[in-house]
Length: 275
Image 1 (cartoon, one colour):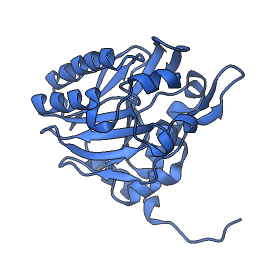
Image 2 (cartoon, one colour; image 1 turned 60 degrees about the vertical axis):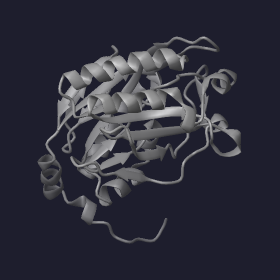
Image 3 (tube, helix red, strand yellow; image 1 turned 180 degrees about the vertical axis):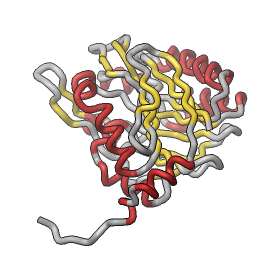
C-alpha cells in the first residue's frame, strides 16, 4: 500500500483551504497513492472562537467534507480527513472530528478527538481546547480492505493506553493527524510517535499542519510540521520537515506481524493492583 501524507499550512478560511487541499489530494492520487491523509483541522486553523462560530458548519452541511468526499469519489482513493472543526458538539461547543472516506465518497468511519489540549506551553502560549470543543468518548478502528486503521488525533498521542487498546483490538496502522505546537513538537513529537509505534508494533502515519497560519481574525497560530511515517519497529520512514507538501511512503503489513512476533508485548498484559 502506498500512503500519501499531506503537510498543510491551513488558514482560518475554509473555502481557501478546501481549494488547496483538493489540489494536493489530486496530486497525491496522480503519484499513485492508495490512501491520502490530511492533518488535524484541515478546514480551519483558528484560535478565535467568534470567527469559528461564523465560518464553521455542522457535518451535514460542511462544504469541506462534501468537497473532499466528491474528490475521493472522483479519484477513486481512500482519504483520511485528519480532522475537521465542526459545529454540533455538546453544550454548543464544536467537535474535532476525523473522517475516513472510501473510494465511492462514503463515510467509512468517524472519530471525535477524545483528549483535549488544555495546557500552558509557555508564558505566551496557552491552549484551552475544551473551552471550545466537546471531547469524544469512543475509540474507533476502521477496516478498509488493505489494513485495520486506528484513528486518533494529535494530543491523543500522549495517552499510550488508547494506542494499546487500538492495537490489541486489531489495528495495524495508527493515524495521528496533528497541528502540534512548535515548542512541544521540537521536544517530544518524534519521540512520542516512535514510542507509540514500538509499543504497538503498528505503522504510525502522522500528517501535520506546519508554519505560520494566516488569520483573518485573531492571532495567527504556528505549528511544528514534520509530518512523520514510522515503521512498526520504530524507524522513521518519512520526515517532511517544515515545508508544505506531499510525502509518499510504502507500507508492508508483513512488517507489523514481524515486529509483534519479535516483541509480543501486546499479549503479555498482567493484572495488578493499583499503587
